[in-house]
Length: 235
Image (cartoon, rainbow, N blue to C red; front, side):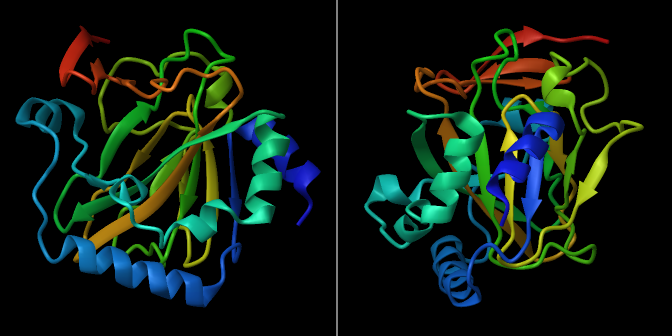
């Protein structure tokens, strides 16, 4: 693994994909832990207004906050730490580990930026781990617009409309996807029984802990801390 080359690619594209980064046995264990936690049909966590306006139907779980240590080894992986440092610089910090579960027949996630791009230097970093293959039969592919982390605010418009330069990612079991918080991205609808990924969020030194409190969608800005739409956006 050429860390310098990956960090340069990330700086240009706003995302990188590294296949076979995590060991299969570790993925099998975490896959079992996640499936056991959620069961067959977990309840949605967000309120109805968010679900209706955001086209984002996910059930989050923060295992480490609940004292679950199964996910610690991935976060402490030396290669992941080195790659993160090459991307974010010295003094970067971990934020939290979040599993995102989507049910069959749900919308996935609409286009969004994880944090406002008003200050290009302030952003989070998504470090996504996949414990099973994301294939077309299951759905839930991640879609990104390369280089969009340098293009400012996600344009107002159709929350699930397509961009001409979008790229569809189909991560496999053990894949690491690293995604800039300002990169325009979405998740396609879920066709299979379920789809989930695990996000080890991090941020550069000096980044506020609440950097991801406000999320930018094509039709609104939403603040999670008080479950409110703080800006309606119209094309």
